[in-house]
Length: 115
Image (cartoon, rainbow, N blue to C red; front, side, top):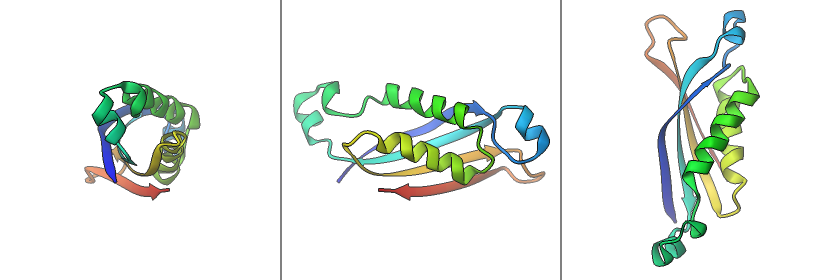
């Protein structure tokens, strides 16, 4: 299986459970690895034969902005659902990183894989 990776998708959204986190957007970095057959796209050199990742990134941002998640686990699940909406995607691994939530911790990250 081939893989299409989108690394470092920046999203500003409500994420967290604390009262101040429910009021102020925070920055997330999202990585996705799509397991997908890329042979047709490699042969045809046509966008129609692969995932339009510019569109996918926009859909990921919109979904996270709308979701107002409390947990990184939920945010990762939201992103996985967006990616799996394309029937060509066999499975996806999603990483979501949040910065500055705990003093002295560079970031917290959740990774999920869904089929």
